[in-house]
Length: 121
Image (cartoon, rainbow, N blue to C red; front, top):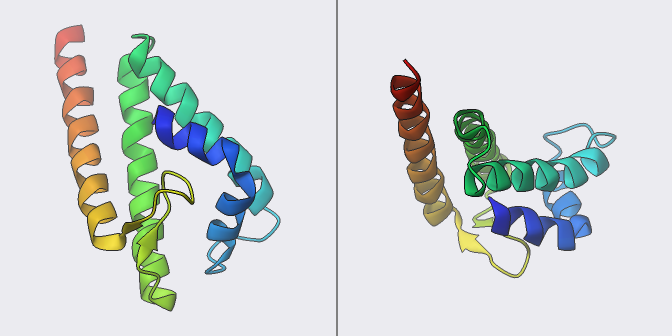
């Protein structure tokens, strides 16, 4: 989360262009998302690294992975976009790799969220 957040914050214009490519989101929302998504990723990553609200951070990671995965599938379905720049424009991966990665992160975050819930009880 930290790496992805930093990469996106360093190049918000590229993120905005990526979000705007398939016209899935209202254009007025794009500038706000291109700044708020990386900040959210940084907050979640710091929460996990610093052991602050870990359960909430894992839940946030899972929700983001669902959002990002749906976006990847939607962009592929609409215009055949086969590349993911989830970690900034300098680190592009094939969509198949990104979907597997997102699935693994979603599984890990779901497991961690449930495991932390069991410990709390």
